[in-house]
Amino acid sequence: MISIEEWSVAAPSKKVERFLEREAFPAVAEAAASTVLADIRKRGDKAVAAAVAKYEGNRNLKPSGFRIPDAELAKAAESVPAPLRRAVRDAYSRVLRFAKAGLRKDWKISTPGGGEEGEFFTPMERVGVYVPGGTAPLASTSVMTVTLARAAGVRDIVVCTPGGKTGEVNPVLLYALSVAGATSVYRVGGIQAIGMMAFGTASCPKVLKIAGPGNAFVTAAKRQVYGHVAIDQVAGPSEIAVLSDGSADPAWVAADLLSQAEHGSGLEKSLFVTQSRGFAEKVKAEILRQTRTLSRRALVERVIRAGGILLAVAPDIGECMELVNRFAPEHFEIMCRNAKKLLGKVRSAGAVFVGPWTPESAGDFVAGPSHVLPTGGAAKMFSGLTADDFRCRHSFVSYTEKDLRGTADTIAAFAKVEGLDGHGRAAAIRFDRSVAD
Image: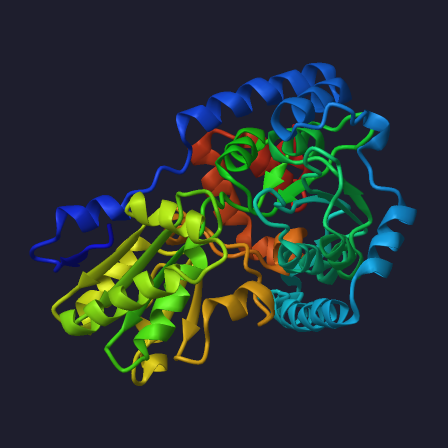
């Protein structure tokens, strides 16, 4: 099921080209999202409860129980073992440090006439974050999303995460949300969570923006509510590309490729690219060997059967890099000699991990940058989540009389061309009141 394909710019393999194609919005997800969202807009919390019963299997959850009480959050924190609490706080501190360092600073420049213009940034008032919890409780996503909103200065951070059939949420995930700064947490997942946050209901007032990853149904829902709220990006099934010149340990390469195949949707993709067929054969053997040892073996084998792991051999490192850029992976590992020199060749990747000592899992859990990244080829046009995604950018202009006088002719010219005499008058009247007569 795992094939090794020859690929080059001049003679691209059809199998590799098919691998590069990903469907961002499956029709079944689009249809389900449309139906559920329309119902939530019409019936509010009643529709949310109905969707929770249908899709999450919890028929007993009422709107009064959507929000997790503070006492339950505190109890969850008490049940988390000390080593896990330390791990959460370690990740939080590293992510917070990175997020704050990346915040854009207010700036201004002087205008020719002695005025000022520039930009300043303010936090959004209320945002929503989606944290997946279906096949695995992604406590790390709590840190990788909510922390950024907190770093941005957001006052009200709403989080939705699935409660499943019982309505119980993993205590480590809840503890991570508390540490990261969530102000309210709802045990609601899927399309219904996106609709509740986007449109607002009696139990959950509307947010301004929704961020966070999810499955195909969540992704479709986010796309459909865009405009009612802002969204960060469309982030679907996980994917990784690894480029190696043969200098890395094949067991390390295989382990990194498998790390994304175990997520559980069956639509994950792992691409390995090298210029050495012999090395590709070693990596393939390691993938097959290590798969048998994984606790989520069945999920990984599902990805393998679907053709989600592919090994490609290109003529040289330059063409290997070209193939990766065409794939535009969510995660990209460069495991080559002088790996940092190849960073300048990266055009399309959500996050780049440089050198053999930087596995993608470091980025997933602790390194600093958010692991909420564009998938499905969207890395060609979107970037990973940052703290600035939770802020509004404002430009400002403060002209002096000299500045306006110096631009009056230009304003008049554009006003005339566009037939907007009111625009032209707004500038000219400051120097000649007769223009209003």
